[in-house]
Structures are given as structure tokens and as C-alpha cells.
Image (cartoon, rainbow, N blue to C red; front, side):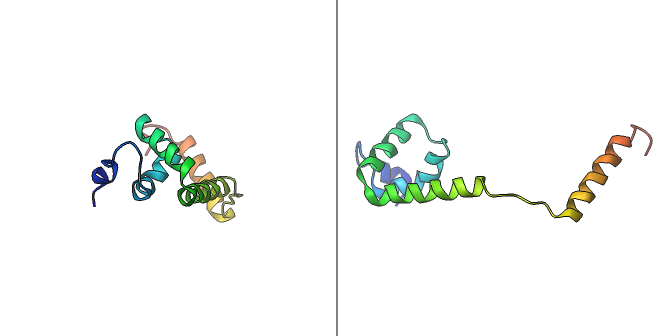
Length: 92
């Protein structure tokens, strides 16, 4: 079943259609009409609303987790950056 077919059922969206675009919707990447239909569906469908909440929670936790760079990799990147700063055009 194509995505176009899933959207062709009229004004409301079915769960399959919502799941097909949910990540794009949550990332703000859908057009206004699709966003409106997804939001309306999420207001009325407990299952899809839970999926949306789970995706949102995962995004939030991934975005806010502490990010540590391996000290050896950091040192190599800093040394590389310094070498680029000291390079002069035509000196290689």
C-alpha cells in the first residue's frame, strides 16, 4: 500500500499513514496540511499518541545526554587543528 493511498481516505489519517510520517512530523519537516492531519489524529488516537510521546522522549534524552570525547581522539583533533592553523598557503 502506497503512502499516497494511505492519505487518500479523506480528511482524517489512518494509523499507518501517521506512523509513516511521524518522525518527519516531530522534526517539523512535514507540510502544513500533513502536520494538521497528524496533530488531529494524535489528539484522537491513544496508540499513535503514545508512539509520539515515546519518540519525543527518546529524542529529548538523546539530545540531553552527556557527550564525552575520548581524550586520545580529542588530543589528535586539537593537534590537527593546530597544524592547520600554522600551515601557510604554498608552504607544503
